[in-house]
Structures are given as structure tokens and as C-alpha cells.
Length: 103
Image 1 (tube, rainbow, N blue to C red):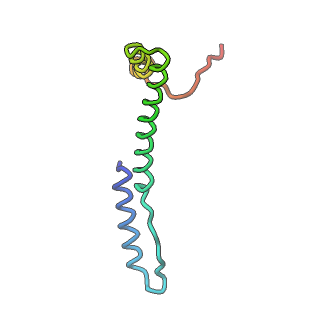
Image 2 (cartoon, one colour; image 1 turned 120 degrees about the vertical axis):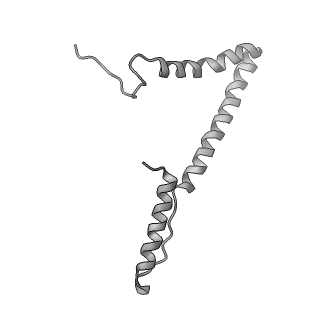
Image 3 (tube, rainbow, N blue to C red; image 1 turned 90 degrees about the horizontal axis):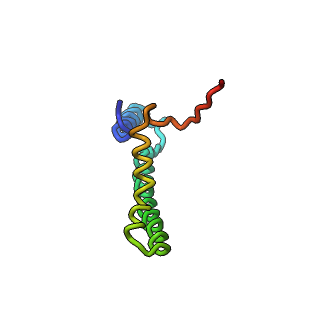
């Protein structure tokens, strides 16, 4: 298997080879838009949203409870429970489907 970057580089090289092999009257101005141009900003935006969400999520308990210890416990309880649920499930990681028994 290959990752997106190497696949994009190979596709761009193949496109350039194909274009070079064409006669002059059949060449067109092609612009290859690598998917990296979309992935890098998307990853940055997710990180930025996580930071903003963490700041806003911490602001509310601090302003309401006025206790940093309680705020820390509140902010860590949900992520820890999600991670432990995912790693300690006897049936493996959840697949996103709701299973219903037909008995």
C-alpha cells in the first residue's frame, strides 16, 4: 500500500510522461491539483478547532465552578472514558453500528 503523497507524486509523474509523449497539436494545458493541497489545510483546521474547543470548554466550568481542580476532573473525564471504552471493550473496537438482537 502507499500513502496519498507518494500516489500523488506518481500520478503527476505519469501525467507529465503522457503529456510529453503526445504530439504538439494534442497537448493541452492540464493543471494537476494534488490532494495534498486539500489535506494539509484540513489537518490544520482540525487542530485549530480542537484548541479553540478546549479553551472554550475549559472556560465554562472555570467560570461556573470557580475551582480549577473540579474543572480539570470534568475536562478529563469524558476523553478518558472514551479512550478506555474503545481499548477495553471485550468485543473489540466499536464499528459504529447498533446491534439489535432479534429474539
